Image (cartoon, rainbow, N blue to C red; front, side, top):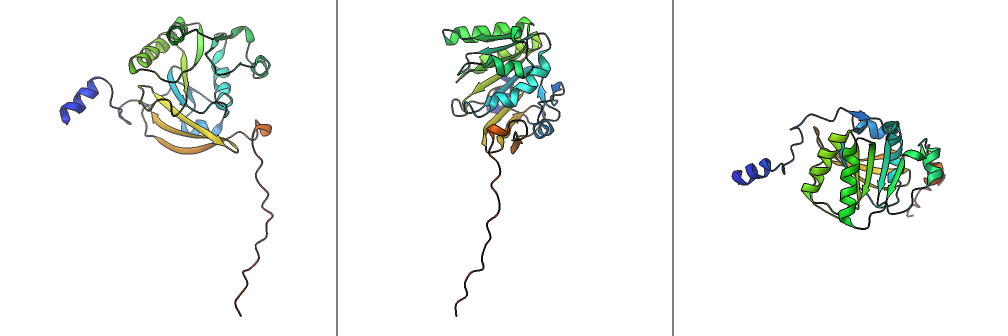
Amino acid sequence: MNEIIALLQRKNLVWHAKGEKPINDVTPSGYTAFDDKLQGGLPNIGVVEVRTPIGIGELRLLLPNIMRQAQDRLTVFIQPPGFINAEHMQNQGFNLNNILIVFPNSVKEALWAAEQCLKSGACSAVLFWCQSLEVHQVRRFQVAAEAGNCVHFLLKDEKANALSLPVPLTIQLSPHSCGIEVSIPKRRGGYPLPEFTVDMSFQWPALTLAPSSNNILSFPAAKAV
């Protein structure tokens, strides 16, 4: 058993919760509860795995952080599941001239485009929607992101792939009436975090549910005579 564990460690396939330094180079996400759990915000460099159903507000969670990091560099969306709304991006403060949307013709082209964007140095953030990735592909992304001083968000369905990927941070999302339910299954330099709620009702009142009114009076139960 010890030999198997040693082999996995040599291949960097064993995760040590406290085995590495925590992520210190971060930018606030724009959501206090999220930043408190992440000790300041999302990473500025490297790969972040985001496991999420499509269309629950995952971009609402990420875009304020991406906007803060953008400066004059590109923000790239690779094979998004829908169209990116230009008016919404402009209202968020993005320069539309610095938005690049790529719809590759194949998985091979998508992987190539992501790696080239990451290591180019021209991009601050690359968002890549994918269903499954191999360990060696994610390692290439991590090296490319570090070379290009870029953050890489891998957005994938939470049921698409059960394989634990060698990334500094994994975020799992699910819908919530007030915004998004978040858990952190994996983070460098720390233990996993249980579910917590990121309340979006103030920023996005039309996209959240108002709390139900508590005006129901309970009557005492009838006593047997």
